[in-house]
Image (cartoon, rainbow, N blue to C red; front, side, top):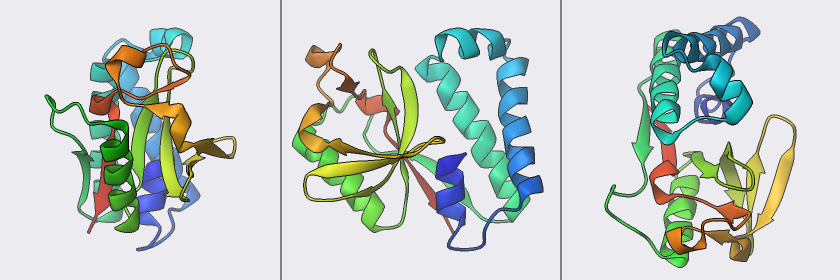
Length: 161
């Protein structure tokens, strides 16, 4: 929802009724896949998250009349270095496209990268803005278990036209 709000805002802010419709679409998506309860307890898998993202992007496009796309930042087989991954995220942000990432293992949480500085990225989350040191983020599967491990497949930019 936060990434959709950010990508749509340059065109117009979403009204409360539209935000409610998006939230309900997310609940319906999880409920239809029989994943709502498990998702609330255990979090969601990459596959379930992708379906949820696709459903909410489609609903946002219908509500706003905009063309909205969820675009994976990396090819499936691509395993970027940490430096290349951060460069790609910054490129998307410079173009006005918020980037979704999954912080796995310690957090098991999907969040939105909304801005950056030379040394940190800003995560725009439901509860707060949080600055995270770039050097603490890893895209290397060998570092699974690090607090800020991000699977490359989870990095998705939202684009709107």
